[in-house]
Figure 1 (cartoon, rainbow, N blue to C red):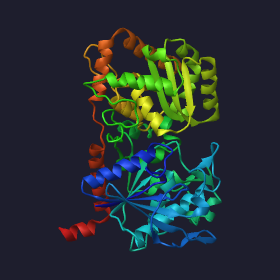
Figure 2: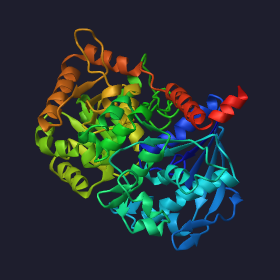
Figure 3: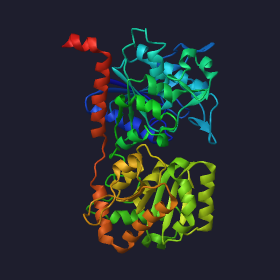
Length: 489
């Protein structure tokens, strides 16, 4: 099949979160399965591109018309890359906003991007199915099923829409409808209206052929008020067209036997390199070298409420009273950046933080830490806990979403399990789970080694997930091409 990915970010060109990893890894795995795949992204400031594919598209935007270009980004691992270029909208310092605040014209930016994606199909590369990701691409299914529904070039194009995080909707004031050229009849309860605002994500939930999200547990959770962020009823209405497909990981990049970004390579059979990685991690974070004999906890994350940092704030003094070192890498809400800075000043020999997104340091944490902490309030899938398994870095997680799907609580009676889990979203529950892990690390080295081996043996590669997506693409195509199917038979 010919599959077009439409997303607002994707490695190796742009990234703020796990979406970019998926948009890099899944397409190349689908190509390896024999499919043709193209990826369409915005051209941001630092994106390097090649030739011009289309010098000017005509994109109506309310009372005005814009003329973005389509640029050719070449081919990587068999995947074709293309970019929507509009310097006024995308040539900016950041992808979505500055200093924790969204750009005020995000609705216009990504409305143009969605319209350009459909015109791209008509003028450059016609797919069999479009796979959209998160609210920034949500207008593609909305437009195809409304304003483009009588266009014979695209009227039978099926759309798969993946929810990477239900917490991000893309909601805007009602007057945005006119600015981006959406008809007023879409501003209603069974379309895009959401508490007197226009909601891009809701539009995609209503108009896409099939919905996916990034773990089976999360597909269940988003149908509940606790995790549905006000859209659980819409998701329940579409539940027969909702599939949970667990994200995979790219073991070509995340594997201690091959990793070029860590101090020493190691494997399940030969773990001595992990100690060298731990020594290097302490150096990178300016922690005392003698701490190499203490258990170390690593964190790589956006600093946000979703990730459970409010729980860490509640128990930080008790946690740091333990004989432990903590390293954290990330950026986000100022209150949590300040929290980590304050803790590092109070406990300079126990905790160190780097406020940044740094792929190299992320690899060093995965390789050098003994444990990896993810106490998320909710977690659609999560990738770091899966990376941690491969690196023999034992996860301590809250049992939610993909964390629950991927981490099995260790059972001393059977020797089975890959980490430690707690159920309640509660600081004391987190602390108890960490203390359980610390006690086992310090007092039962053979058992700890067993947990590491269990995790390192797990396989969460993309191939299994890609096969599931390919099946869904086929189902979606057949649902909109019954006549073609009948003719071919």
